[in-house]
Image 1: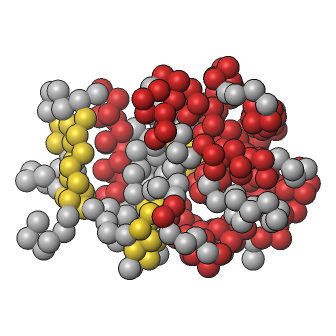
Image 2: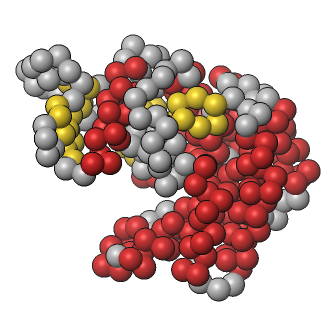
Length: 287
């Protein structure tokens, strides 16, 4: 571009890629002008459309954001608080949007989680499998039936440390490919699931991210009650899906499982909490 911006061209020849791209470009266009966080911008086609669609291929052009991925940064408590605030502002900006293909099936969506235990044969035996089994059982029996009572909206659905950037202008979020219609609290649970690392803290260090989010989007009583169970279910989903995928593609196993050790460690920390203890820990964390 004439202004010197670096760009990323994304293309797909897969039928399911078309719906995913339609969602992503509409989401990024809907976030234009939002404040409190950054996201890539769509470069319109010469015809003014958000993406191009040919018979066998589709794609779009977006800006490339400079910055450091959160997993490569020094994620201090202050940094995590700022990430939580930015995520809350992202939730507020996504809330009014009604986007094409937002109800398309996505493996990582909470609606798919009850069926993921079909993959448990791919887990190593031992404590990890036991924790995953307990967390997913709790999700199916207790968490999922109550999710219909919390607010739903368009969500990013993967604000992981790989999709969260620290830039000179603040926190940025990239890669909306797994986004869709889900519980608002889902994004908080996903982001928090990746930063549970310190066994000396009740929520493993996710306290500051949760507090930052809640300072922008206060949690309802039910959201506070369900949050830790939802975090554990997300960690379990990540473990199940990636052990399964690593078995399918052994040559890429190291890359596929890049987040698995973190999820296993985080799940072990949170599994030490009883239901009441978990809810109290969330209440202590929020402002």
